[in-house]
Length: 120
Image (tube, rainbow, N blue to C red):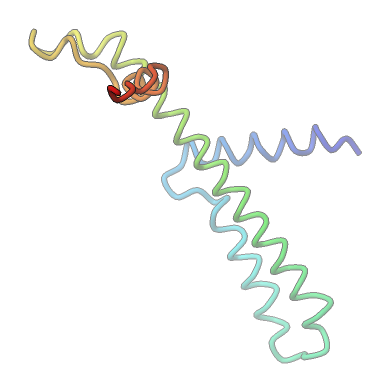
């Protein structure tokens, strides 16, 4: 089994789900998995350790992966919007706002320039 291909496939599905849907299923699937696994086994106590704990761990890992990818996708959308503002949108504003810059460009400029040293 090619683990890289599997990871890339899952990552593609999660990114597509997060980018295209307002209520992404990749965030709700771990909770549904938990409900299905735990709901039926609530009466059988001896199955808790070998079944419910691995399901809970897998659901937590899947939710963590989906939240991490959501953070990355939101960051990419933000960068794309900032680049679009710097290239096109600010020129449609009135003249006094055309010298403005996007938030990411201002942050990059602030990080690139060294902080002034206090006088001795």
